[in-house]
Length: 196
Image (tube, rainbow, N blue to C red; front, side, top):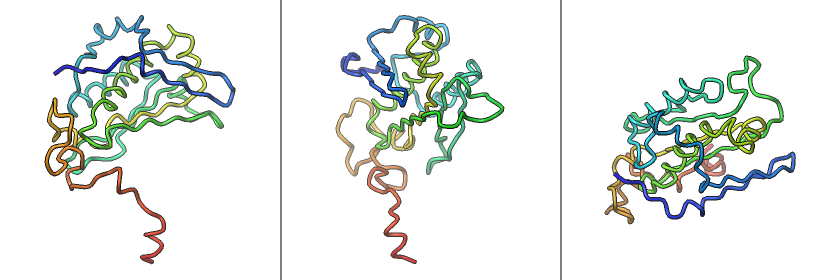
């Protein structure tokens, strides 16, 4: 299985924090990621849910001062829904720093839209491997709590067909195992109020 990402130079992320400092992540600058090979990280393919579990647990074990992860629930078919927190004070006994900005990435809402899933795995790797080596990343992790949910629809991801860019018949893979399109079914406060 090969991960093909169209021109990583297009994946330039710009975040402006309350300090008015600008942080740019140039994913063409992959220096320092040579460590990924020695850490057993494969940047050339998608991880299935079992491999994602192992990758996240290994990352937490390797970087306990920087990474915390927990499951925020289970999918319909029992797969873990991971939330990964990356920041410098992740292991602080006092909890998170008040007023410290928080940023959340959620990917793979449609299970057959897999590039976001792969990019979140890559972003986790990028942040932990570049910390202490790239001043921008180090400063970002000093000043921001980053939360990453690599796949909110792992059942759809498992049902999707590799190499098929369009959704399968019946939107298999796009929807979760209950046939629900998660991107179209957020809780509606007004609908709830009307049912009271």
